[in-house]
Amino acid sequence: MSEQLIQQTKQKMQQSFEAFERELSSVRTGRAAPSLIENMMVEAYGSNMKLQEVASITAPEPTMLVVQPWDGSVTDSIAKSLRTSDFHFNPAVEGTVIRVPIPPLTQERRQELVKMVGKKAEEAKISIRTIRQDALSQLKRAKDNGDISQDEQARYEKRVQELVDTSNKEIEAAAKSKEQELMKI
Image (tube, rainbow, N blue to C red; front, top):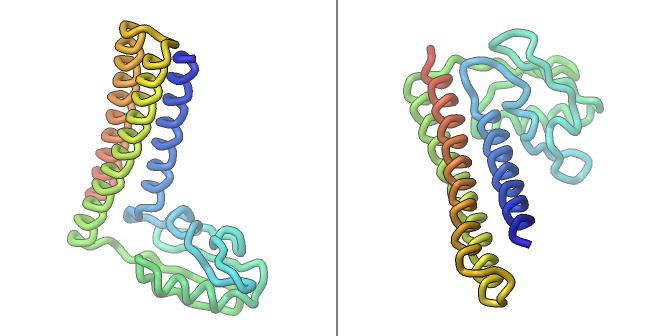
């Protein structure tokens, strides 16, 4: 039972880290990447959909994204979503093709993005701590029910803490790498 708990805990922590990495990929650096806008919500067909579900997104140049809706009727909605996004893009609509210039980052904006990365890293660490707390409470219940001894509980708690330490190091390394990427001019 407890080995299974350790594996589940490890898997949950890995999923939490992968979610953090996906969030980091949407934080903009100085170059255009489809991941910047692919998860942006767009009003289409009477509901909110991700941009990648209604259009193809390419980066033909380091400072330009091109969005091509599969259905021309959502072009205006996509352009509006791009203008009102957190990034405040200024898309140019040419027929059914939307060109999105990516302006260079100012030093002030880079520092804001570094703070955002730090905040996302802290949220990921909180998620890891929550997973740890769940695992520790399950171990305590198992000990109280007589399924494991106190020594086994202590051993498993130590393994859970090792998983937490490893996950936190991975989060810090990914955050530091993204911060360096952001501050590179």
